[in-house]
Image (cartoon, rainbow, N blue to C red; front, side, top):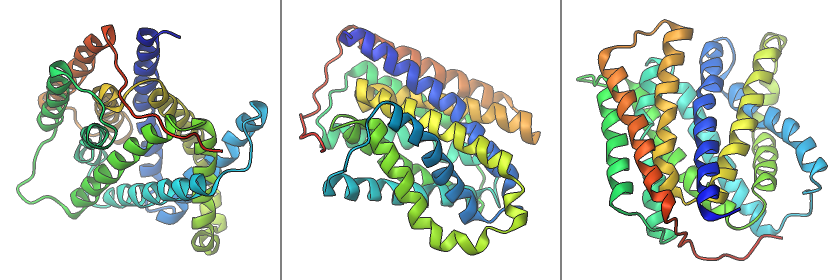
Length: 296
């Protein structure tokens, strides 16, 4: 696959992933209060682990991981456990649309980390697109004089998710991205099991259909996203990740009756334009990420 086509495919995978991902978060929010927080976090890991295992077996990707891979995926699992737990907790005091907007600077953090640590290139168009995407987020956000406590948890999610997106790029250029997800999901599920087991009551398990939906969306979107990072630079993909915001805001209106105001519509438009602008980079894609030893 040539470079231009690879970048187009990566843009499509990242966009599709982040458009659909808020659906899992919306289902999770609908269960918050009825299901313990730790169970909701564990369900995403355990369900995704069970669903990705057949893919690994069919593609014959299963092989003994190295110590380095186990340590790295344990780190990624811990980041997502804290990030998702923080995000779910934020739902207690702020609306779904607010939570999604507060943590939406994650792509910028991911791109900055990639530039600093992986020495990835970014041109003027890319910088402008990142700034425009952030402007769209700020326009979509209706700031409060005194943010509710949940806002700080959502912001913390943004910091952690930005780190996770950056690590996605590192993993994607080092080895099999699907195997990395396989390890991450099973490690996360195992780490949470001792804390979740006493909470798996009949009341919690009666929501198994919703649990399955969360896992299906999670594993599908994670596979698309990490493979997008295999094909393109993090700072190239960053503006496309902003499409999660208009998607989340639409779901907030559809599922929770939250009003879509003019600032949300204008902000969503700016975010989408940012993603379109970055397509100009496709004509001369350069991947300056340093080569790394593949994981065994």
